[in-house]
Image (cartoon, rainbow, N blue to C red; front, side, top):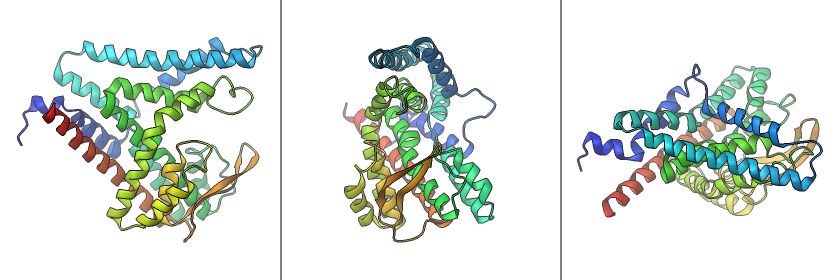
Length: 327
């Protein structure tokens, strides 16, 4: 099975592979403006233009729908026609690789989790709490080392779908235009998809749209965790049992899938009392605690996450090869 350079460049897996591995080892270049920040500015501008304090709840809902549809649809159209303008195949490959690096967030996520584990190993608890606070919205100021490890693994498992597998899924499905539309929907949710007085109605559409985008990737992520657990010799049976039992316990229709699969594989649990912006909430328990969360388990969770990426890339390559061969 021999491939020419031209054939390789035409495969989605080629630019996805290069972009993913660059981001895993080097992350997005810090000296360049990130496309997600540009999206954030666009959303801020749209919110400032549309949302008024005097609006009724129904008007807020309609304006939120308008903002979501315009942002996501225009993002897809922009990148679709931008790609059409690039006729040189080498420049097109570079363009696609660059935006793959921007879309995929696995390397930066895994690096931050490992950094937190290293800080705990060095007994630097306060810096570890600070580093964790960059990844989560909950209060980390009173967490001990075990709770820091538990929360790190929990946010890793949730973001394994949102920032890693889902972008890859949409890259394979629709290339850069669809993947960037997904990132716009995800950014909308992170900025306006809150259940507070200001955004309850204005951000409802964005939150539901993000749920819809992540519906299939979340379940794929859980399946990949099962396979990765088997490869690493972790408890696949418990991972599957925890997923069956706890996948629907979270408020989100999606986050419980990777969280329960990860918790079961590692023999830990997530949940209990959590503080958000000064208010204490009692989150449902996910997983079955057989051991105390530790630095070693954080490292295992990161290793398991690397495997999910490699397995998904392998499945993507096989799928694209077979589709091209048969069609």
